[in-house]
Each structure stands twice: as C-alpha cells, then as structure tokens.
Image (cartoon, rainbow over all chains, first blue to last red):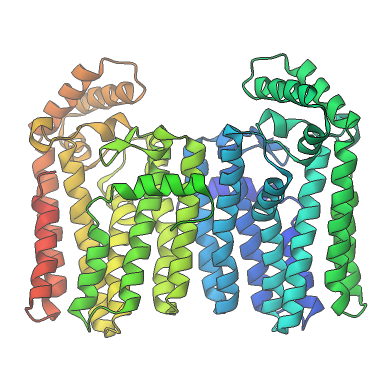
Length: 303
Length: 303
C-alpha cells in the first residue's frame, strides 16, 4: 500500500492498525477453498476486496460524519474530510491496480460492477433521508446494494479465482448475498438492542436519519396517529431539536412494543435458510462447515 | 451514465450540463488519429478519461470547499459534501466499468495507475498546506501528479487504442505530459493576473493555502525578511485572520516585483518546446497541426 507520499503512508498505517473482523477476505478464501482451492489470484482478490471495503468505510465516515471507527477516531475526525476523501480515492485506485494485476477478466468484471452498487446504495439511503420513511422493499434494496453485493462478489470472485464451475460460482454468489443480508439485518437489530448487552452505542442509525427494518415495520403495524407521532419524534431527533435521551427511549419502547426486532430477526432467519440452501450443491467438508459457521456468527454474534 | 437511482441521475445531469472544455478526450482522439486512426476503443477511452477528470473535480471541490465549478454551484455547495463524495465514487466506478469493457489490458493498466497519481498528488498539495511553503521541485512533482499524468495517459491510451507502435505511444505520452504541465502552469499564472483580463477570480490558490510557482519563486528571490513577511501574510490570509483585499494586493505586487509570473511563463515556454519535440517523430499532418494548436491554446489562452 505504501507510496512515496509520507503523509499518505501515515494515514494508511493508521487505518490498517485497526483491521476489523476481515470477514470479506475470509469469504473469498473459503469460497475458493470450497471449489478447487486457494490460488495466488484468490489471495490478491481477498486483499483487493478487503481494501475496497475499507476505502468505502473511509468515505462512509465522511458521509455520516462519524467520529469513531473500530474504537478509534475516524480518518475524517482525526485529520479532515479532505484527507478522508483523498485517502479513500487512493485506496480505491489501489483496488483497481490490484485487481488489474490478477489478469482475470471475470474477476475484473465482478469488481467493476461492485463500486457502482456500493455508492449508489449509500446514495439511495442518503436520499431516503429527505423522506426518511422508506418501505420494506426499499430497505432490502438498500442493504442489498450497500452490504450484500460486496459479500456476493467476495464469494463469486473467490470461486472464480479457483476456476470453479459456473454452477459453483452461482451458488456461492447467492450464499454471499444471503450472508450479507443477514449481516446487515443483525447490525440493524443491534441498533435497537440494549446498550449494556452489546457494548456499543445504539440508536445511531435513527440519529443519522436512517430508518431500518425494526422501526419501519413497527411504523407499519402501529395505528396511524401513533406512527405519525413517532415519525415526528425521529425527525426532531435527527434535526437535533429534541431531548435525545427521552426521544431515543420512546422510539426504542415503540419498536419493542410492536415487535420490530422480532420481525427483523424472523426475516434474518429466512435469509439464513436461503444461504444454507445455496450451499446444498456442495458436499459436506470442513470448508463448508467453516462457511456455515461464518453464517452462524453473522446471525448469532453479540456485538 | 444513468442508473435506477433518480437522485443520482439528477446530480449526474447537473454535472453533465456543464461539460467544460473537454480537452482530455480531444487529446485521446487526436493521439489515436495521429497513429492508426480512431477506433471504438478510442471513443470509449475518451469517454472514460473525461469521466475520470469530472469525478476528480467533484471530489476536489469537497477537498477545497469550492462554492463554484464551471460557472454554477459545485455539487458539494448545491447538495452536500456527502452527495459529492458518493456521486464522485459512483462516477469513478463507472470509469472502471467503461475501461473494463474495452478489453485492452494496456489501456486498463494505464488508467489503473492514474487514479493513485491523482489522489496522491492532491494529498501532496494538501499536506504541503501544513507547511505551505514548497520547493520548486515539489511544485513540479505535484502538478505532474495532479494534472500532467492525466494528459499523459490520455495521449498514451489514445495511441494504444489505435494499435500504435511503442515509439509512437512513448512520444505521445511525453507530449501529453508536457502539455499538461503547460496547462497547469498557465492556470497558476492566471491566479496572479489581473481579474479584469481573464474574467474569473484570481488569488484563489493562495486563499486555499496553495503556493504555486509564481509566488514560490518570488519568495526564493526576495530578501529573507521580505519573504518572511509575505509568508506570514499568506498564512493569515489562508486562516482568514487578515483583511483579504489588502493582503491579496500586497502578495500580488510582491509577485510582480520579483517577476514570479515571468519566471513561470519562461518555464512554460521550455515545456512547450519539449512538447513540440516529442511530436517530432511524426510527419506533418492536419492531426499533428491540431495537437500543436491545442498546445498553443494551453499556453496562450486568455481564460
């Protein structure tokens, strides 16, 4: 990653010191292993896709003005929006460079399509903010574009790097997509879970003006007047013109009362089932078990 | 360019309504024409590189907090930093998509290396702000990375799209680089030219904390005490803690007194000569004349 630019290197070192869970490269590696084995191309693909994920987080933190990332200050908070935009751009360029060096046009096509989905998914969510109240269908469109497509590409490109059959590649892509949906649903469920249980701040989505499944389904289920009252409250919270502690408590109670979290968990269970089904074409093996454990982790993790 | 995302399309339409001078795609097309003729690959390359230029401008306007672009509000001023970051990302992803569809690994490699140079060049300039006072060598490194490399790639990829010989490709790359250096030098000279003559705001670089050749050479030439005074003034101007009208007038007079603009113009003339020399391997033709006219325009334009 290093360049001749010392300032750039300083920021890159800072980002890479907090590596995160690295789920995406794990998906790449296991997908290749499940087909015909890990190759040099697999490893380069894993690196490139993790880097793409990290680049998009650096830009997302500008978009959401997030002060923290992985327990330390975000790049935009530590340096500036300017630095975060440019370092993110540099990382994206490095992704393209890495993918180009693989010399596999299929993998290149997979990644080339992905960047548009990621940015367009974030934009969809951003635009939804001006009318914060999205439908369930819009919600699934957004999380598919901004999260699930990347997991789908990790699995697909991993298979491709291993010279898999088309049937294997298609199955792994589907598994990755369903895994990604589960992963995002779990994240969105956490946001309505008591803070002591998960050890990280909750209700941050709604403070950022993002309406996720637990809330949107509760709004659909509640009587109109009550739903309108909660919408009003959430808008005031987003605009920072109400007492946040009371507003957050009221919205959280509302979501619990209408079983919004339980509904989201039920949908997650369905997508988990689809993920398992997608892998049914592969015979049992330690690698398949590992992918299923990853799915279990996505759904059952407590933080 | 259009996607299914209506908000994204609205921003893209806004950007494309003001097309700018489109010098970069002209360089791609003329370079191909000078070799073995324009092909479909040439046109796709021209589109992709103009799009890359536009994407980088959208992000640059976030970095510089620029209120205007091409006579209208910049994307970040009209919408927000968030929208500008994401729409720029979408455009960059579209560039990769377009380049991938060309199925030419040489062109792909040319463009893949470019993104890193662009962002790293901007970062270099940004970092220089914390110690605003760069050397002449650093100045040329910055303008090469942030401007000249893109012109070099336009010429090189244009030649490549036309199945040019390696000698032709190398010559055109050099021409593009020298043209780009001239272009940026001219822009930086404008910043110290009287506003009435060029019809656009001047002294904007120094207000953004960017020290360009006319000023840095004047600082080298002036007695130490005078140079220190001007540096102090420029830093106060950048930090917005001095009267801007007086400070700008004093810095401009200083640059004129030490012939900073004349020096930059002399350096530009040298690079123009190198550009002409690079084309000497091609015999005279209308296409070669057109490229030389473009060079003349870069150097002699009055806005």
